Length: 388
Image: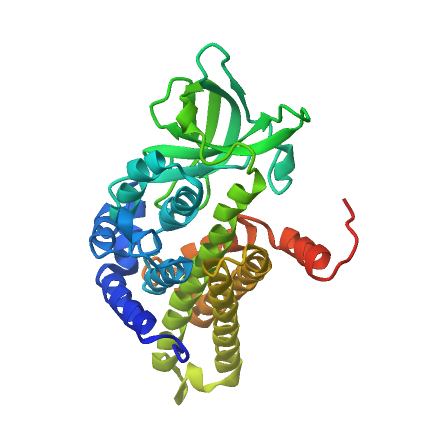
């Protein structure tokens, strides 16, 4: 892995996070998953060291950095074999949205806890009939004229970590009083809110963070549960979705780096006939290609983070989608080649790579599929007409 061109501060941060990650490692995360728990010890230590809130404002206990620093933390934890998926959701999506658009009261209530890891938030956008076509979201909020409260109803699926989160940031829609059209809005829903129910989705994916379906049955929310301006709509939503794509790229790159490092180590040591298998080009070249792909994906991720942190939301949108695409593809190829390099050992629990075959697919699917990213690039970057 090359860190050429990075600032001294970023290189130091990488080194420090790497030390923490290696102290826990893949064996720790595997045991947590096997026992059905959460990586609480790692989460608390990362928080105490300031890593979880590195992107949040200093006045609320954060590090005053940006998505560039937070993605670096997640990548290095992933490269050590113990990524924290909730970093994508809680400080990156929810923390960023609240820092940019929350009221002063919302910032005081949530950002210090998100920064020090004592509180977490989940994020609910996908619905049974509204995935990539998010304009078809049917979760709807309406005002109670008598009290000013909001009444929120709908369903969400594939929501990560709801069982451990203190609240969920829900994407709903409200009716524009002038046009009658529905517009996107975000609401903070407390985990114990009446009418807010969850059901765990049975997944083949082995991860510490579980997936849930949510049902919101006229959940009554106070007026101040609405995040930001009721009329801001998609601006507020994409303030969270662009960091989500950048962080997913970091998650994928870290996973790919971990798999590649295990394969390279094995290829150096495993000897067949007279030489280690890594001396054979049939083994060496695919591993070299995987390394190149991961390095290129990181460059696009860093560009996306730089644009986002610099306030260029439009430029960051294009780069974030490209970074997520490149990282997802690089991760899948790196994991596949790592398993292939180890042969039968690649499918054993001892080496811990087989579980990454399923996990690596997540980066191709979520939070937006590679096909929809290609649609985005063809329409937005190349100016080609839509087919839908």
